[in-house]
Each structure stands twice: as C-alpha cells, then as structure tokens.
Length: 228
Image (cartoon, rainbow, N blue to C red; front, side, top):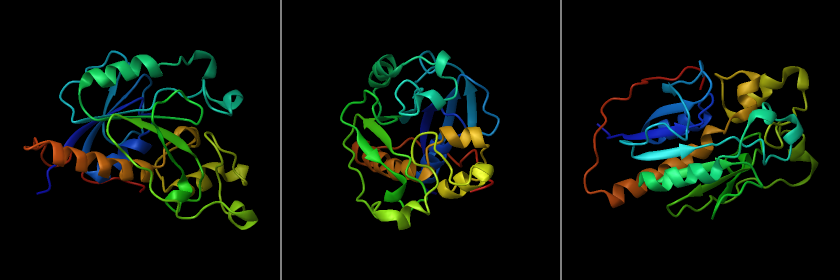
C-alpha cells in the first residue's frame, strides 16, 4: 500500500487546495475560523494563528487575501479581515516542516512562484502566488493567453472572477475549475485543485528524499470524493 503523509490546510474554506493534496498522497485536515460544511476531509474550526501545528508532515496556508486582491471592493468580508501573512509565516517556519503559503497577486510573499489555470488546461485564469520553504519551480505554460479565441472560452479572470454568463456563474465556474461540490460563494474563494496536485507532488518527492523513514498514516479517512 502506498504510504500517505499528514497534511494541514490552514484557512481551508471549502477544500479546493486540500483535494489536490489528497490526490497527491496526503491525508488532509482543514482549519478555518468559519464552519465549512462542504469541506470533504477532517475539519477543525479554529484560528490559524493558535491551532496546534504539531504532528503534520506538511502545512498549507491560504490566509485572507482581501487586503491584497485587485478586486478589493468585491471581496467578501473585506471590512473584518486582517492581514496575517507575517505572523502566520513565523508559525510555519517554527513548525519545522515543508510549508506552502498561497495568496493573490500583490501579496507580500517571499520567493514565490505563480500558477495559473491555463498552465493546467483549465478554463480559468485565477493567478495565485505560492511561497514555500523548499525549492519549487512553476510548470511551463501549456496554453498561453493569446487573442480573442481563448478569451471567449475562459470564465474567471482574477480572484473572485467575472463570469461571461453571470446568471449561471456557479455552474460555469465549477466546470472551469473541475470543482463540483462548492457553492458559488465558495467557488469565488477557491484554489483550483490542479495547482495543489502539482505542488503536492513536489512536496511528496521532497519528503521521500529527505526522510529515511516515512510515518505510515494508513488508509485514507476519505475513500472517495463526490463531485470531482
């Protein structure tokens, strides 16, 4: 049986990032301040700045991005969100395991790579930046945005997106990101799981190389996912 690692997803929302890591070989636990009934794995309602980070092989964090998004005026919950990137980074470094911190373009991340949906053949741009404490290279562009032909087919341009069919936004956003279990509001905050499937593969390879023994976690707690 293929051994799996334990992953933690801070500020997990509905689990777009977690699904990619799960498919890459991680058993995920999500943490969020708000209830997340659609999150598909083990969930802890709590604060990313105080939750216990011990006993995980890898940590992903998606701190609130509303302060940095170019669509700040449209961002859900903007008035109540604080920028926690710096204090969260301190916690991730202190945890002593590989980490990835994700945010929108313009966020104060360090040595980040950029991922976009067209790198993975998705019908969505949704550029995101990813900081890590291990070396990670972005994949090559598979379908660069050129001309009107592509623009007629994509759905979401930036963080919260603007559908070219606003009356059916959730249907088209979900299809564009290959996500079938989220509401429209959850999709607006989601990371396409293709991004973290790629990143999870890099993290897993790093763990396999740097650790002589891999702690077995056993059979995944989530044997199947509905809506993928």
